[in-house]
Image (cartoon, rainbow, N blue to C red; front, side, top):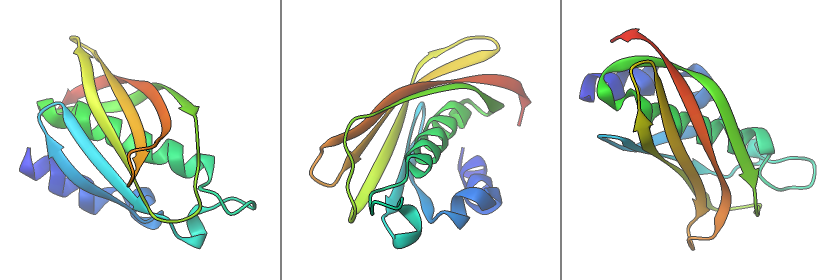
Length: 130
């Protein structure tokens, strides 16, 4: 799992470009964090919906990958519940079910006070062994 974690940190240029970091990874669970910057916000000064979605997809994908297989996102569903303009937010992905070819992951994004900003689930399709 450590090797996969290092690869995810080094090779995900899109995530790095958007200032998102893998904070925690363990079996069936992963957490990504984003320290909100001007580049992370929409024209209203709040975290851009695309940033929230990317953070959720990354956390869910990292959780799915903890079984040592390779996955691609099949479907993502994210409900935006609240927002903010500054601080640190975290997305936690937890595997709900693994099948032979798919994996379902629940995701929640919270701020430092624990306020739920977004919630959803992602399904991933297994494309093979690592």
